[in-house]
Image (cartoon, rainbow, N blue to C red):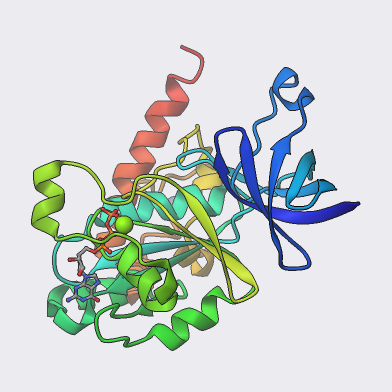
Length: 291
Ligand SMILES: Nc1nc2c(ncn2[C@@H]2O[C@H](COP(=O)(O)OP(=O)(O)OP(=O)(O)O)[C@@H](O)[C@H]2O)c(=O)[nH]1
Ligand SMILES: [Mg+2]
Ligand SMILES: [Zn+2]
């Protein structure tokens, strides 16, 4: 009997697949995958063939909509970029880079400010103004504030939780799905150990979709972006008048349509300053593309 499902996790050469009928079935990858260099990946939509009770063969991997590299996970709909409103201090450049990585492969980035129960006013203000062009959420895993709205956002989607260590990714997942009992830890303990509490990627079914906790922040491969591709990662720029020069990097070119956005507040100073850094970085990558 053939059945479709979604790959939840790998354990050695076995894979746990949640079938469309809602059953979790352990399946073994078809031998030829290895020869063909195909690696079944968490999030894969797959076809399994039931052999006997509780055992099945993973016989086909359906085409992937996208593939994250670190952690390896396929078919992600949205990337939650969790930021802490207190400690650890937000790494806004990381947030902006994660947004770009997601948008590049058709994943919707969702900046989420956690720990609003102990929010630092300046962080809250920066978060709300810098990311006004995104569908943001403000939540507290501790008090449960904003979790209904978060729950709403997760429904029917495959969502990857990303962000610096200790921002509360696992705490949020535990608040949403108490049965998970993911390990969480104090910031001090994390820095002492110099590593993340969460160590591997696993997908959990949730509200007709699935959620994935990732160890610390996850950066995807940063390839070489053309300027127009980078522009497309900034929703703020869509309000801009056309720039005089094609390929304008919006740095100090004359008659740039993006710079005036700084005066109206459509683009904040912080976002723009980090944009400059990122744009120059991609310019350098383009120059050395064929080295
Ligand atoms: N005050 C407050 N503390 C929180 C909140 N959410 C998480 N914490 C605390 O922040 C610390 C880190 O939380 P974790 O859930 O382990 O963080 P993580 O993002 O999963 O970290 P890694 O797995 O290392 O990447 C823990 O001590 C939590 O109790 C919150 O909403 N408010
Ligand atoms: Mg964690
Ligand atoms: Zn410009």
